[in-house]
Amino acid sequence: EVQLVESGGGLVQPGRSLRLSCTASGFTFGDYAMTWFRQVPGKGLEWVGFIKSNSYGGTAEYAASAKGRFTISRDDSKSIAYLQMSSLRTDDTAVYYCSRDPRIAGRPPFDYWGQGTLVTVSS
Amino acid sequence: VLTQSPGTLSLSPGERATLSCRASQTVNANYLAWFQQKPGQAPRLLIYDSSTRATGIPDRFSGSGSGTDFTLTISRLEPEDFAVYYCQQFGGLSFTFGQGTRLEIK
Image (tube, rainbow over all chains, first blue to last red; front, side, top):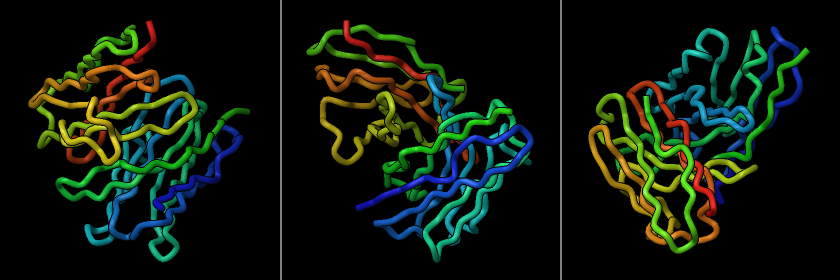
């Protein structure tokens, strides 16, 4: 059974850092790009960034709101994707989700999501 | 930019729902997906490549469209279909969501 489990959320002060983890199981993690999304409670979905599989270079791309402050990485040996967030702002407060994307034409993207982890940035 | 309409749709079970998603530019290779989200839950993939149903999605859900105009149709609403629906596109290096359509029980 495919599972994605986010962890690492919590209350953090503005300007501080936090690292989220997305632990995967039930599929070949290394075959998938991994993507982070977020959602302010009561608002819409926002793409944060993704990291390609190592077969496609393992590079990452970020939304403008995340560029320069957030870093996505992956450890295929542990089947974990990370979202390192620094210089956090109050408007980063959201539920953060991870999801998988095969990046292969005809295969469904984002067919599995984690349950989300809440990050609250507040003093 | 993806613009969804209407913002809220009030219908009764058994009725047909038509949700619209309009892109400001031609969608890349028809990469247009639809997600359903219920309160307290993660989004659920319904449709990808503009018209392909994801695994396990009932056939009352269908997607259509190309270029800049896309539609999600629910042929006959079931009580469990009342939720928020988002369209999503992939622009080559980034993903964008519409602002969502809330489908509520009339």
